[in-house]
Length: 281
Image 1: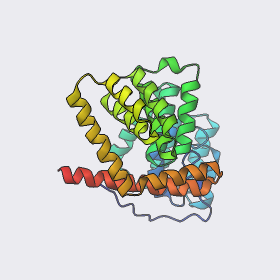
Image 2: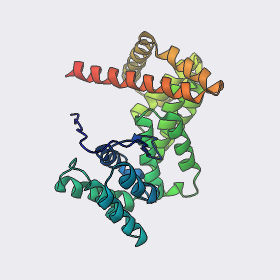
Image 3: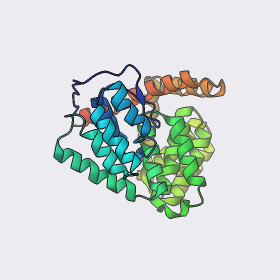
Image 4: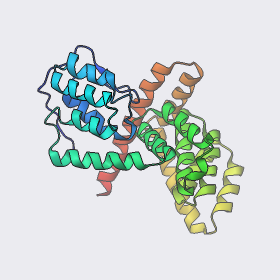
């Protein structure tokens, strides 16, 4: 269920920019909402001197600004700084702020790579697929990657495959899906792997891999029907054309246009998914 945010305070002339998402903040209500929404990526840079200046100079919240400055001078913990900002508006109740703090503590207790994965997952869900892909690659190449569970590593490779599919590179996507399957046996991963092979157009390879991965002919037939339905839906909605367009934009090095088209595709996919869910209900 959506939530309408009413902004009562002063509107800033110069916005505060969330460094990870690039969101521009103009009101204290927007600030509190975005801090909550991007809780997993908050650090000393975001909850730092620049934010204290923004609160005082741009939003006219001199008392909050001074309190935050004092906490910074005392080298106070991040949660204390966060609470000062969240209490600057009426957006959240005291109970909600306590819940936010509890979640923030859980994030702080995560290992660096698990936290990095959570941030990358959010980037992917928001349509910032190139940022997500780079983040996933950094995690996989990190010397501490062995700290992650097999399922977490599988999810990272799978999401890399999803991104490569959206970029129009089914061969790279198939490779990622196969690596994901090697770490975690999941039907959905197999489905996407075979879908990528279908998009490559190598029918012999597709049949060979399908027979290798499935002992049951009935299960294979069911999966084939799913893949065919997905391909037909993708063609009907212009998905293949959009993917090819993304691929060309990547090769032409046009990041601005790429991000715009990628966002449109993500929005269309979300709408289609919601429609499918509603139809099933």
